[in-house]
Amino acid sequence: MHYVSTRATSASAARNPQLFSDILLGGLAPDGGLYLPADYPQVTGAELDAWRKLSYAELAYEILRKFATDIPDADLKALTARTYTPEVYRNARAGESAADITPLRTLEQGEGGTLVLQALSNGPTLAFKDMAMQLLGNLFEYALAKNNEELNIFGATSGDTGSAAEYAMRGKRGVRVFMLSPHKKMSAFQTAQMFSLQDPNIFNIAVEGVFDDCQDLVKAVSNDLSFKARHKIGTVNSINWARVVAQVVYYFRGYLAATTSNEQKVSFTVPSGNFGNICAGHIARMMGLPIDKLVVATNENDVLDEFFRTGVYRVRKSAETFHTSSPSMDISKASNFERFVYELVGRDPERTHALFRKVELEGGFDLSGALGSDGDEFKDVAKYGFLSGRSTHADRLATIRDVADDYGITIDTHTADGIKVAREHMTPGVTMIVLETALAAKFNETILEALGTDAERPAGFENIEALPQRFVVMPPDVARMKAYIAEHTGL
Image 1 (cartoon, rainbow, N blue to C red):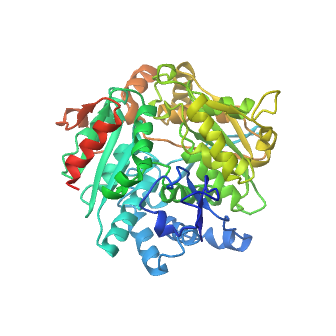
Image 2: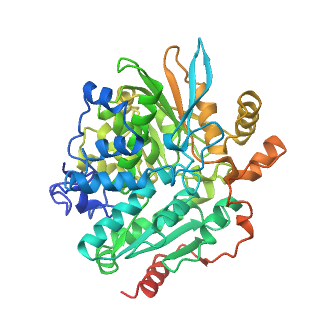
Image 3: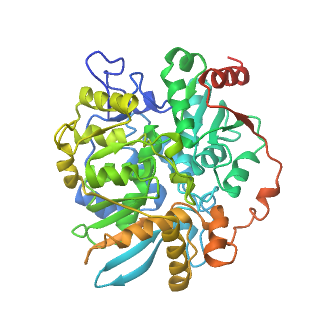
């Protein structure tokens, strides 16, 4: 299995195909593009039948071995077995089994279709990011130990990626984590979960700005190839291919758990800001998983919804980005979207590069086919199964109340966005699976507003906001960020 960059033109430094281990520790390709397989591995009906009997760890091994072909089978099997255990994913709700890792719960069943919630919040930081990040931590440690190397992870978070990465990497040999987050724009729980970590290899940096400012800093540092090499910079953001492919597993798991034969199809609705989570669903569909629709659910920061309705991709400026009650989706520049656009334009790297160069210079592009637009590829979106919808704060409150009243489940704000949008795209005879984002306790301010009571917390998280916090506040300045990294890596 080889990987190519979405911007791998004939003059590109990343035009040569790479193996999984070559790209594992990095993020952006040297030419600024994102890595994708040269060809997607295909899954047969016989494989799907066999996989119905597997544990989550066994399924993860079977899927990942199609992508990580240069890691010995025995090593990969040991890594997935160590990652996906009930001991790690122990925060299952009452009535759910931790051994299932990502259990399904049916919410609605009727003539209009079946609505199912797939739990992804059972990991150590109570968010779906754990599903990939725990594996990434083990993969990083494995690769670094094998080559006696070190890695300085430089990432950005709007709330959940940071804590998932830090909990996955804390204490890992040879790894330091420098995590950027928008200052005072996460929930109190999210902030405490990250900033309360006292491990010497964890560095939290609160950036005076919004998430997009943090993400731009990560890309700026990653694009300085000499600095990146000298300071051994890697990333855990969803621009990292290994992180995305680890998320592919739970799409297969959800499908296999919700169906009894391969003739059945399901749809997925995914709360999305950076397009990483639903990009994994796109990859699963390209592999042959019988997915009908992939529904993108956004909040008020509706850049992706606008594209999937109109063909216009228009990023917002920092001042135009809303601070919402589903803050992990407060993103107006979806960094993983380039992977899908690359497919949409026929895997043409020069065209992909030109379109995203236009994003940098002019703030977006238009593929609607209208007079004066940049192309007409929007007409082909339907063949990839994408639909979209938008949710507001009022919608979130109403959906949280509705789900609590009808099903006795307290959902988080992002999952509420997903359920609201999923209901708009239900199809008779097709199960709609909503991917859960996080446990409701992480966004208690809105749960209290919606229900008048606090969200239940798992053991060990009762007073997390009262713990001492360790972080620094910095402006969105690339030079200062590089100086801080250099100072603390000693390289």
